Length: 358
Image 1 (cartoon, rainbow, N blue to C red):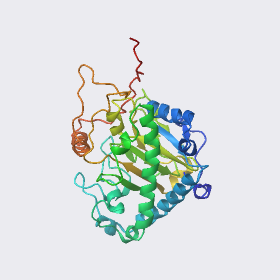
Image 2: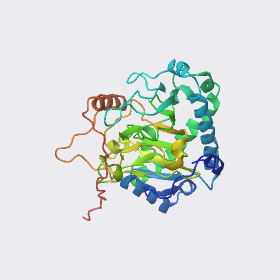
Image 3: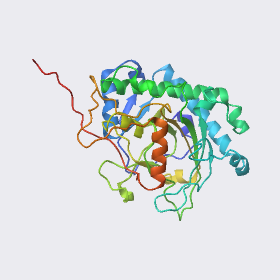
Image 4: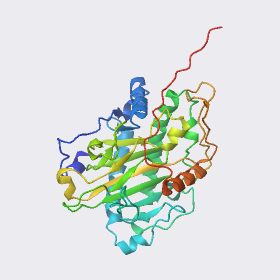
């Protein structure tokens, strides 16, 4: 994802694997209000809910990539700490999702323990929206860089959301107002590590899921992330498709909140992490994800009405009357109880409103 020099430190991604054919969108062209590029982004968000965002060709993109590389360095520093030290900052879901999650804390589809560890750095903590949280010293020492990264990531999201709002005929700023930087939310930067798996026992590291928030910016260098194409069978390993990391690009995916707001026009696609392919499986896999969540008080009802292309309620449908905080808690309980199985959401037909002549 960031520079070629960082990619060169790892074995290459194999050329003989089935990969997801994701759209590559130019961040520079989005900044320039390029209509064709905006349409590409919107189409990708409806078809897959995933796309690659290329940050080359503009100073804003170069700045963000530079900070993304700094986050890789911090990730390695955090995960080099002793387990005992990290467990002092263990996260405590559902009460708090910030802090450290150890390997095996969650389960995969067949009930076996997962093979991923991560540290969630709270956006509110780093930007001063909330009181400071306790973190390891190496994180505290990089508060300035973390704040800059989180602010720039939020700015990138703003560019994407402005395109989506325009394509949906929403008033400018509609999506931004639901997830502002200066309001409390569960937004976090997740620093992930996957250690090499035994050659005789390689399997899923993080179970298939959709993201509960609104949008994710993921940087990784080695493979392992897989998507399930629309209509494919999640129980068949051969149906899953790897995403090949690309220099200078991030993987962007929409979460369930976007599906709620758009009444299913936008898509949140199921994905998982398995072992890295080829020789990449022999080295630790680091990645980091900016996980944007709505303002806790933001309404989750569909953004219908006026000129919006988001459809009004149809017979048999009910609107979501919860705020984001209530909805996220409701989703978490349902997932743990098995009432909200992992599946892709969205992909609803887009019906363009036409004026009726009188």
